[in-house]
Image (cartoon, rainbow, N blue to C red; front, side, top):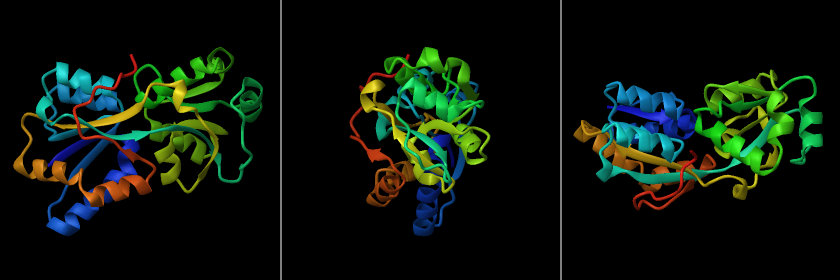
Length: 237
């Protein structure tokens, strides 16, 4: 059983899979990358059973490529954006150009690549709506996943970065210095679905993703569980 999941799900999904294995004795293989990379791998024929995306755009792409069983598609969790810095730097930052540029200094702010990584798409949308993008565009360091952006801050290669709230919860090396307003971007929804070739074993794990045990882990890791009804949220374009 192989699960493709957005890199921002790493900590929570590792714990969920561990809980599932303890309860059932069944092993779950997890493969993490950016949602875009995973969706393209599915389209190229990768034999995954379950796909969890960090936004609906890439899930829609997988649906269009006929590599998703649409009858299993539903939103799973929601998330939020935060600005983080290394643990030693706990000073709160205002979301204005002067404060952010001062915090960045001669370095760059880490974000996921806004051309294809959901966290970066949301971050760019927020910065544009907050009228900060033009001031910061030349002060950004792009990463191929949100966890890679987080790692730049953890290693102090970037003084600050924009990541998901769940990433900040998962890391012991960063501190939240600003909350990005939810209203500055479309809702951050993580949908899940099975592929048409998914095994019976995968279907059982897919059901476990909606269990109370899984929901408890998700909440502890900074996610909000959303409705299991078919997804109709607007996705970043």
